[in-house]
Length: 278
Image (cartoon, rainbow, N blue to C red; front, side, top):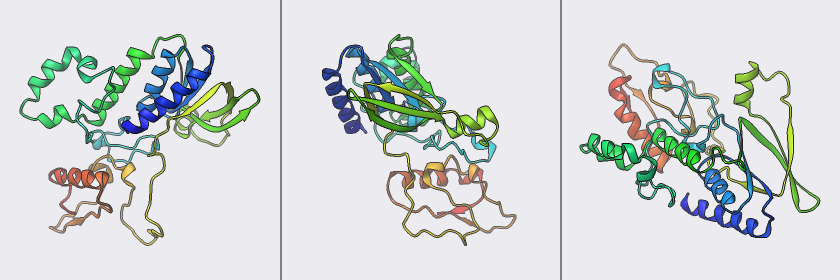
């Protein structure tokens, strides 16, 4: 992620060098990469417009709107993590160099250290909720209120087309989640908006599309099956509890970060749910 952010910043700064100080730049995505790109575009005297499909900033670090007690899956495709998921980088490296955690949470830091001195994991490795709060504070510190920075939340970019004079036409429409919330259903096609920009930065990340095993046929499987990006909690899986001592078996396919963290989360959650074997 750090390498990706550095590359995006370098591309943005290179574009800024060749552009005029009045250039309008579309930044697609308001996650970590999009926010830091907009911040440095402003430093170069450019005017960024952040286009975000979700109704809030944060990208993959956007908390789920469904609590575990609601026993339901979060159907927002823009959310990819569960609220108690932790980063695999410490707070000293999982941050922007010009806005360390000690600056973002200066007033609470000493109290937080004291509160979690017996549980260093909860302090050094932030959760999804904490990462989202950090990104919001970064956004408020550098972007919100700046007259040259514009936010368009709840919009899905559908087309980017080059036009004369080395500019770009960007089209977007209300995202599916936005349309459901605002209209009740998607019977009518949402209205498309369009704007011309001098440059475009795509900061959508690489977690947008779930990766399923090839030839995975689950049509005959009667149990619950989800992709890791849909996981929120063991309760949200809504598994049928047995009145006997039978065990509910959960299969986690994969052995990388998501699989291991979900398996650990499921194991810790067994005491509050049905008996499970992994």
